[in-house]
Amino acid sequence: MNHLNSILLEGNVVRPPEAKTTGGPSGQPLVVFRIASNRYYRTPQTKPGTWEEDTLYMDVLAWGQLGLKCMECLDKGMLVRAIGRLRSSSFVKEGEERPTVRFSIIAQHIEFRRRRPEGGDEEEVTLNASMEDEGGALGEPLVVYEY
View 1 (tube, rainbow, N blue to C red):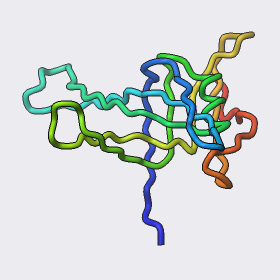
View 2 (view 1 turned 90 degrees about the vertical axis):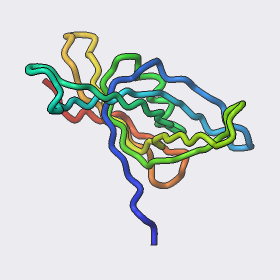
View 3 (view 1 turned 90 degrees about the horizontal axis):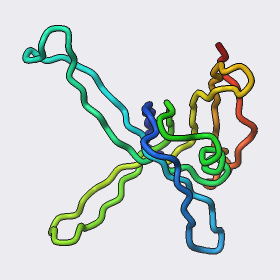
């Protein structure tokens, strides 16, 4: 039985997506981008009328056609919602004894808003990876909501 490993994180793209190449015979496209997710809260020490802020930075990895579509559509500053599974990797930094653990999201579903060229309105777009293969096949973007 598989255990549940699912994450939904919403935030702003920190820098433009970056395409990476993978080794091996398959050579699946991999696109990596980082999002910053802000949480606002108050504590007893918070001044009236203000909020404390906590920012989480998380890498999002999008494979195959999903990654290529993210590369084409996403840009720095865009609000994006990434849904997928959480992955950890560990490595030892030079000069340190203990390994550093880094978490990232393996994207299965990406939502974002983009401006339409003709009217300047925004449309909400959803991109999905296929469940058939890990590389992910992608259909055309689906407009979820327009305003």
